[in-house]
Image (cartoon, rainbow, N blue to C red; front, side, top):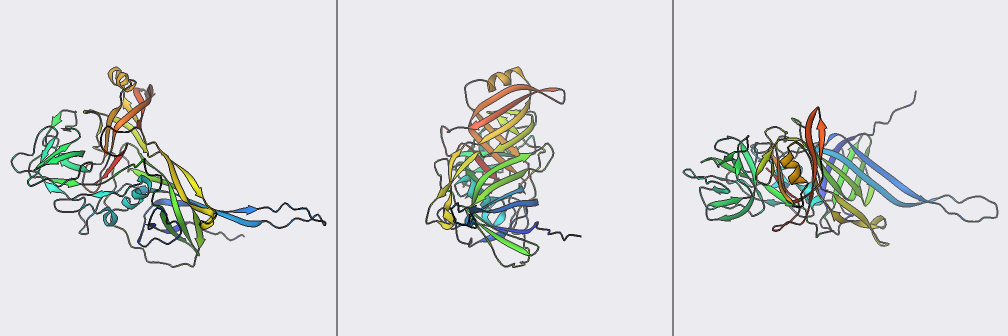
Length: 400
């Protein structure tokens, strides 16, 4: 009977390289990831044939060329967890995504910009504001274009919004709070307004910081250097949201096993597609299906003097797409088939430590069409990120 080599990945560590030009050194700070099932790890070596004429008609053996590698894995979308075990960035607590999440530093690599941490506060005890104003009990310290997770008075649920501006105790948000039926709601008094760690796609930056991975299995260990790629967020109704990372690497190296003791990086509980709101403009719609693709296209940067003949990857295009399936109405289809862009806000989860929100302020609608889903009329549509009128990034991500 043949022996079987079980080569599955048992431990996977991740870290960021020191800069966008560093693709060949071990990351100074690393932590264990907890991916779903087995990450797909690929390694290969290009062989260079020597097609020479010999008098004895024999061929020379091929020689080793460039090494190629890649990694594909899924992560649960989990929010922020404080050192004491509480979820989210509450009053006086920083999001601190580098230490309080597993997803945050990975987003640094694919988004092209480091996340921005805010600290939470508590809404005013007498009047927490109306409309697009949320009033804090003290001077508002939230950053423009970060997220805020606010409890609604009527709905009793936490709703994610993007901060437009602050003035004194007041926070102006991107759209007012709503109830489950879409009616106007207001912020509840004396409730914690959780802060986010937030990112935007930096389309002007082709030179992202690359990822480093250290994978270990039974009787093997392999390091992957200078990795970069795309991320797609997937979720089904009532299911855990996942983030799929598909990355190519600049180089790889087999090293001696370390057999490290696993230590979990802090992270909240998974975001689940229940009590999750979807807005187009100021109107709330029922959502059947969705996915979010960052839409990154890359090109390897070849160089004679680079490690393995490469100097990492350049992001040549960033075209994020939110794909959605909605219940049908003539008015909605006419709107989506029109020429104007749409301000889209998608929230998955509704509790601190288990919520993520995506805002696409200028979503260009494409392929909007009537469809039939389980015998019901529906609308399939894609929102493609375009340059916003104000602020940074065609897609913003807020992790709570």
